[in-house]
Image (cartoon, rainbow, N blue to C red; front, side, top):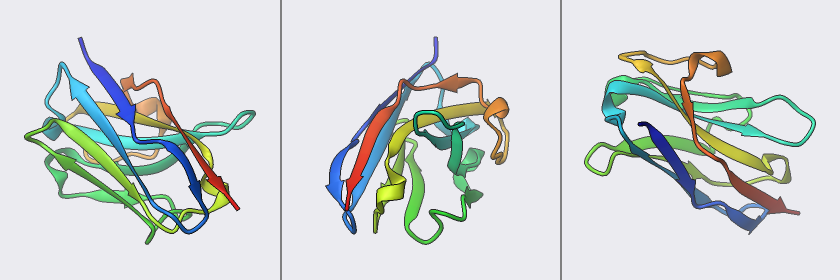
Length: 125
């Protein structure tokens, strides 16, 4: 059974940094596309970043490009999202998602098979 557990969210001032972690069990993350999405109440879930299987390809939403970095540690079966220069508009629940095996990258919610429970990130101005 696949489980994704996010951690690392919290309250931070604008300009600060947080690192989110997504610990996976049941599947080896290196063989799957892994992504981060975020959602605020009343809005659709929004793509943030994805790392393709093998870790070669990465894609970012324009709103986070240059500030966020997605990476993974295959030995720990964990994916990370390093978030720097945070802005109040980054406030959301952040979700980790796992896509199909040997898949490259996708921005679409429908691509992803498994989701974590989410972790709240709040950026104060």
